[in-house]
Length: 312
Image 1 (tube, helix red, strand yellow):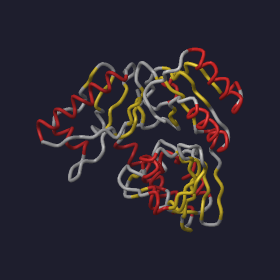
Image 2 (cartoon, helix red, strand yellow):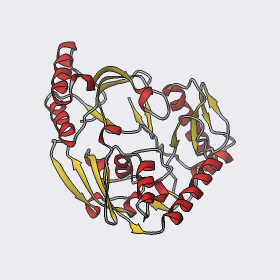
Image 3 (cartoon, one colour):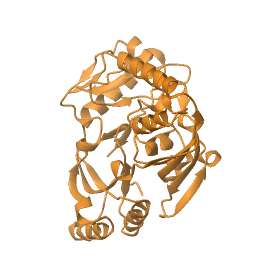
C-alpha cells in the first residue's frame, strides 16, 4: 500500500509499532524520524514510523503487518531521487540500504541485495574484472532503485545487465522476476507499476581487464564532476528527458539558469538539476518545478515531467 495518509489513532499506531518491533527489534523502529536525514536533497519532514529490517523475510513480514493493519508503507533506499513533503509522511517507511547490501560474485554474475549502492557494486565489479556496470558507478542510488526505475547514464541502462530479480509482492510473497517480465523501458518497470519491492538482483556482466574498467569509470566520474553540481544537495536530474529534446537545454534556453525560489535553485552548473542551496523546503522545490514547467511550456510548447519522486 502506498496511500498518502494513515487513519489509525494513537492507540492503533502504538500497536502497529509494537508489532513491527517484534519482527525487527525495538531499536529498529523509530517514531517521527526526520526524512531529511534519509534523502540526498536533505529535505523532508518526519515519518510516523521508520523501520529498518535486516533480511528479506523481515521486509515481507513488515509488509504483511502493514497490509493487515491497513497502514500505508513506502520503501526508501538512498533517497537519491526523492522529495519528501515538509509536513512529513503519515505512513510506515521501510529502509533498504546498508542493512541489506550484500554483494556476491558468481563467475561472470553478481548477486546483489537491493540496499547496495550502485557505486559499491561498480567497485566490486571492477575488483572482480567484470565489465558492464561502469555507467552506473556515479548514479547516487541503490540497486533496488536502479531496478525499479531502470536507471541509466552515458548510454547504459540497468536492463542491459540485469538477468533476474527477487521481489516481494504487495501481498508479502517472495517471487522471481525475469528480465522479460520486468518490462523495462525509460524510467519504467513492471515492478514499479505493480508495487513490487525489489530485494535482490542478479547481474550478468563480462570479463575485462580491471585497468580498462577503472579507466572507463574514472572517465565517467570526471565528466560528471565537470558537468554536474555534485557538491550541492539535489535529487539528481529533476526532469525526465522529453522525446526529441534535452530538459537541461530547454531550461537553459528559457533563461532559467540560477532561477531561485527560497532555498531551491536551478543549478548554475547544470540546468537539468534543482539544488538545495542550504535551507530549501519541499514547498520551495515544488514551486520552482512548477515555474520551470510553465516557462518551458510557454516558450517551447514542451511539458517537462518530473523524474524526482514526490512523497507527501
